[in-house]
Length: 212
Image 1 (tube, rainbow, N blue to C red):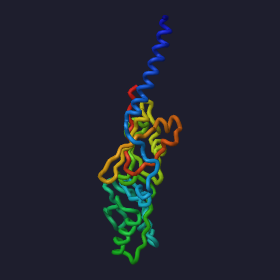
Image 2 (cartoon, one colour):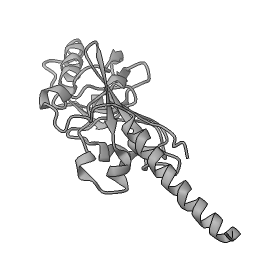
Image 3 (cartoon, one colour):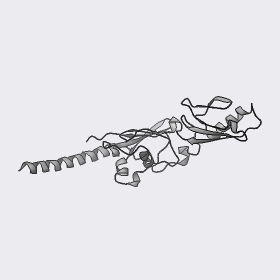
Image 4 (spheres, one colour):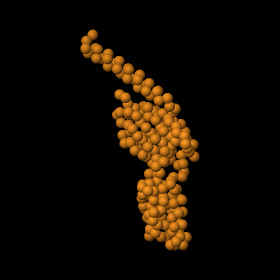
């Protein structure tokens, strides 16, 4: 047998072995797939809560001197004219507006305040974290009806070293934690839309490195 023929056969065998091993690795996760549907009440999408590094616009009707756009500091507080160190993180925009109204009653009669969030980060426990072999691993603000594909677009997809079909979604529900298989290779490389599942606030997507 010539050296060239031997190399060709060896290459063929190696590719076959690698395919079998990769398939076994994908199957060996032994994890259930992520649910294809999530009850809308579970996402909390209707009750957005202000988080550190958000930007909020405070409008005080008929009092433009008190209307400001301010960032939420890392400690979760904001400062506006006449009001210092007001806790904003963890409150809905309506709750924050009500509290500003209460504070302003010391200085004006019947203030009417509207709070709008213009730059979203969200509370840390509501963000989606992507770690491992993503192009840009980071925390992402949750948005209503967000899916795994939306998350992967935000982080720029997978690196060349990612084992996408061995990725997992770690999800906490109360005191319980559940881990699901995420078929990222099928979704991103094969276009298998059945692998595009909803995500929830607080999910952690872990993408391991391929063994080859």
